[in-house]
Length: 545
Image (cartoon, rainbow, N blue to C red; front, side, top):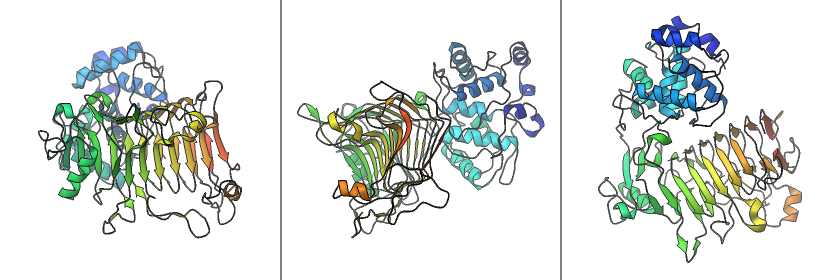
């Protein structure tokens, strides 16, 4: 991948560089000359851009400081720390753009900073620094996951169309004056919530008028439960994207088993005031889903399970892309959190006791900005807790910018729960920029032919017993020791890179980076198992304690 560095961008004015001194006010140029941070070689190419808050210290802060400097709002050193001077510069920049003056660098602020500069007309086939700026900006605005190679190809055009649609612009896939204006403002043409062509269902807590006797089809007729939302959608049977818009407040919510999908479209669970590209500072707060109580204890079970349809006539009965999205919700006090289950209730073992792939899976989902806390049987006793997020035969998901706090089982089951458990044919998942704090089992576990998963830029605080990444499968010895367990094969080509590591759950030692059981980086599992030539189960690098 060809990357554009600031040492290059400084000199690329004529090519439409990201941010140029020549475009600045005279006063800003004087400030730079007086105290210019050293931005040579600073990376601004990221597949996703985290929210930066006061006290953060990371490479992306350095990028933000250099961008703020180029915009004429920061004259300090490029320290990589969100200190008081940097926060003040962010507020000053936001005030100038008409953005919420939060002092945090969220999606809107990133988008405006990254897109600043010249505004040439760009379309499919174009190349150069201006295209790379657009790619960075779309990664910030929509988590578009574009390669920042400066080449305007089909993926970039598709992301531009998605951005134009989400901001109420004319959708033509061309970056013209209106699209540039939307990007550089950080908020779209009107600055308000973009219009939506999605079929919408509205939820509100009981104390705000939510009742399952309502229709759920307008803000004035909100329903109260996710189970009722599924009924409303099944009755309406829309053939467009779906948004379940959830008013802020607290919902006492029993387990939801979700089986409604629209092939070729998405189903999104979002705060009522959420707009694509928003960060946490742009909404009034996260709606809270808390478990119901039976007597004095929380009921054992899940918060939400994305499952295979039960109707054989459903187009996704055998699995496929379910495209379910979760944004900025809080989930608390359940034995288990969110499950993507492409297995239940299909047959998953052959006549010889080998695990088999039961369906095409429930794939193509995303989880962003969620807050999972107090998950596990320490908080909701009665069953075994396995994970805040569990994927079973579920691939091509993006799990980014989430918080996992107090994910804990009690007693001899403490090691059985994980922040994220990727298991049984769950492949090509991207897990980035999440925070795992106080997880009694190993925070990330991967099992049984779950391949090509990527774990990068995650932060771990007081987690685990054996390792941050645990890879497992059940071979012949395991099956003899555990009658009734299916025979399994190793996963391969998983990547664990650039993560911030920490102490174990007990706080007594640094937790190992990775551990495999059975051991052996090239141990496929015997029997019918094999790894492709040259493959290993796991690659790691650039992780820091």
